[in-house]
Image (cartoon, rainbow, N blue to C red; front, side, top):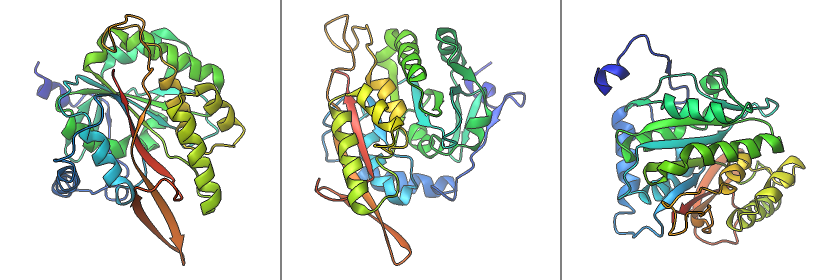
Length: 304
């Protein structure tokens, strides 16, 4: 049976879009036009890194589309067979790490197949990870990224992971499971971790939290990220997944000449964006200056 036949198999479990037309365009033509428009702005830009991972927001495209375009521009030239998607579960009281039981994630552009073999490997690594489709069916954070993956990584399968309420042992378990599952295939794997930088506080508080989180992220202070998130000194929605990935010590020659290399390179900030509310209306602006109120950012984590 061919890959196309597999995706069209009516017996397969399918996760259908829930925020198309709300967080991003609804039709294939609109999506392709938006991606082409913003990707073309980066055509003359040399990517600063060959990313093992990109860290991107999951807000509506009208706020973050330029950041998404900058991030996915970085992966040009990489041959990617699988994309590991890690995002937060917005039902914040729900503890756990959840992988999907679906076989296919639908997008308005076409279907993305779920890599069941890698899902099974993750499940074999720890009891902290469970297979449960219910969180995935109602969560938007990974869905808004799927059209970019479909166009930027043609033919790649996906491994969708949602992280629930902060629990240090769960984060450590996810780190170890990622190490064990993907160390031998890093050259064909892309990690896409989604997080916002801060919740909706006043400009001063939002900026201070965003600045603190970005600084710790760039310095890879994963334990501090977890600790401050649990104490609500950081309100970044997705910090747990970021911390789990940055703590990985992948023992693979795909990362460097050393067989004991980890995620050691400093994440590179590609852009930042803010969202402001004035007279009851929400507006956004892409910012280059680091001294503005920032709620979102895109970063890449180099392979070498």
